[in-house]
Length: 111
Length: 112
Image (tube, rainbow over all chains, first blue to last red):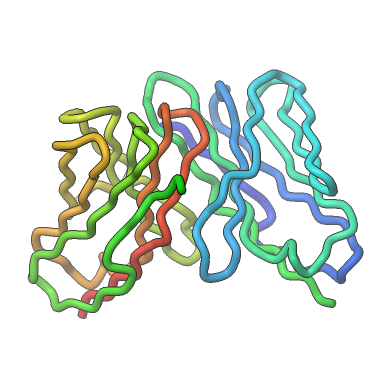
């Protein structure tokens, strides 16, 4: 079945440093979504990418979808303590009707 | 306010005692699903429903049941809970299977 791998599992940064998490799928995706889960909270939708090579920005966050639609990345510029949480990618594709989540990257930020 | 509501938020139960976790959404979404979240394993889908009376297994369905008699409700049933079902459970809904998912607040279940 479809597998979505996400790295790194953990990332600790100093406030102001950049952060990137990567997502790779074993199959071609129709789209990819990104979610953020604050400690003790629930996943909250950030963005969806659909087109090959697509790049979207939300303030300090930059999302990319690979040309082959099998990988994606989330980059945060100049991290802040409010960025702390687990970031998940989730992909859909193929003949099943499921959203497959990566295992997430836990970001901690040292002030 | 658009939301997904799960109950209860916390539950401690004993092995073998049937329980139900309720999930309700007020967005008229077609698609609903249940996930469990365990340390190091991320979010794994248990069951999903494309619409009323249409349900299917996710990646980890063993030990769980669901029903979708009404569009807004999607309860998760554990007929005979076991300690390995101790986890954090999330219900989610979306307009379609590959669109933005809205998650409930989560239910932390402990089976002793």
